[in-house]
Image 1 (cartoon, rainbow, N blue to C red):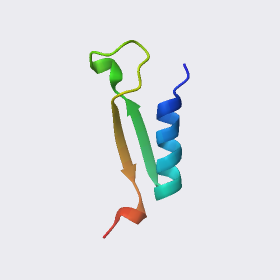
Image 2 (spheres, one colour; image 1 turned 30 degrees about the horizontal axis):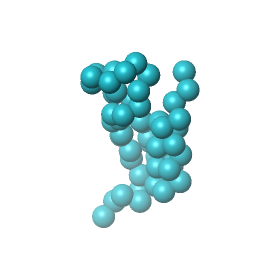
Image 3 (cartoon, rainbow, N blue to C red; image 1 turned 45 degrees about the vertical axis):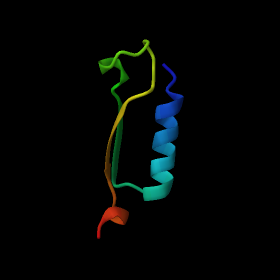
Image 4 (spheres, helix red, strand yellow; image 1 turned 135 degrees about the vertical axis):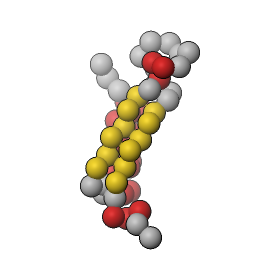
Length: 52
């Protein structure tokens, strides 16, 4: 299945943060939205650029 929104999120986060680890999970199916929706995401990102 195509996931254009998820792919765009991955692309932008990768460009901005150069992550050591990135996981983008589409959690839309857990909400009251039509099948195949891309409206709710969980993002796990680890990057040196986020350290203080």
